[in-house]
Image (tube, rainbow, N blue to C red; front, top):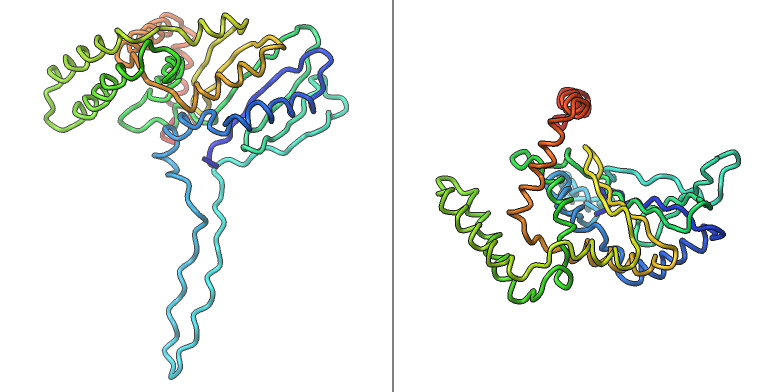
Length: 298
């Protein structure tokens, strides 16, 4: 997981110091398992590129010289792993002349937190960002990062389901059917009909948009997300007295994600694509990116 940098951009509350908010995050997030926050996405998006994390590698010892008495092999020296993305330098105190008054902190779980005070509103504007996006899509599954962004709004084992124990067998069967769909010579029409049938059965237990409804009840607004070439960002605006509740929900959202209603979500993704095709600026942007220096082929 150290190959992916996790960031959170937060605006301070009126009269709240950066130290107090960082300490609040430590108590609320770290002690309650926030280190798992975004782990699901980071793992899916980077495993094929960077592989799973491992212990520091060591160089093999060279063979002993051919002498009458062989000399002992030299002790192997550990080789430190080089991170794909270096963490930014910390800025614990505000820099003089910086109108944004931004400070940069790092939690014990590795998450980098940017704090910028805004005394005009009693809200915390949070952008939880993962430095992984469309460029990390598998070659044969382009669009997967964007699809994963959508699925992280579908709830958890405790949120978004009437009875997860009854829903789970159908979700597992759907996952198995998608595996069959990729096999050479698969009867796609038959498999897709099976996926549709299992999806309808699982939908009997699903509660669509329960995450959105829960956030609305505690006053969280602006719930959204976007996927870029090299970043996926989850956005929300949180009342100052609901920060702890928001953090607890986010922990569950990322570490206990359930990919329910996977098949029907295709329609939502297609609709977003259709809207983009109706926008000349979006068409130009897509064309320039596909042939520019930020192309995934680089």
